[in-house]
Image (cartoon, rainbow, N blue to C red; front, top):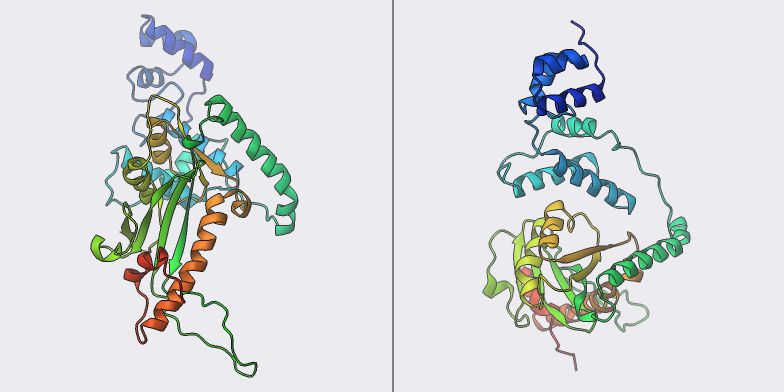
Length: 357
């Protein structure tokens, strides 16, 4: 049976009339709306715009997701179908609508979500060659600094460099890269290294006046043995484990909440903290943004493919760190013949100040 067509505007007028005291029967008749359609909306079973009440998220929450997805795509960090599903699943767990051990949301949820928000679409992004990326860098950098300047002016941060932080992460491997060696011209040089069995991520942060937050390590594995894994690290160092040794959005949020704020003086009711970091999806989520807003923290994402220009920690910290780590790893292998570097050595070697004589 074909459904009776009606004007959506007439439905809103009929709904308002019922809210003002008119009966559902009379309002439906006066405005040409099916009585059952109008009754569902007055009972709260369906919203006035036709949205069922049993959806996982309410309209305002979905709107926040839509705005976030659109923004990330506009700055070069677009989400795929599965990324959107993981984003929504993470948000549902955070809001208590799903349990962490439950499966991720289904494709059915995804297609229903996309249907509800016709301004979203999915398509293959255009390829951007490195040469074109370089050509576009001037405009990209100009827009970045313009937006950053606006945020700093709005929040009175120009004279408060201690409130501006840069954050970055890098990975160290058990298989180090040997440096150059002196050798006979007829001999092909070789150097013994450890097998590539582990990857340890270091998260670092510092502000514009040079104050640094103690390092935070993400080790591969399940059990975090603090005494063994953090042996030899600076006071205040901390960390945790992940299956891969890589960071993810949950770890990144925990780092900010449990570690970063421990060493940063911040009054939630005062001037906001500004954190500059790259927008890799392991760093960005709606739950992280909600948490940051509640703590009066501004998360400002660097443009994609610009870390070599805009990321101070990448250039001034982690670059030299990796060079020092490779040197210390080579020295360790030389002093301990037959031993290999494991995840238990990496943290200590990463901050070693020993210099070969």
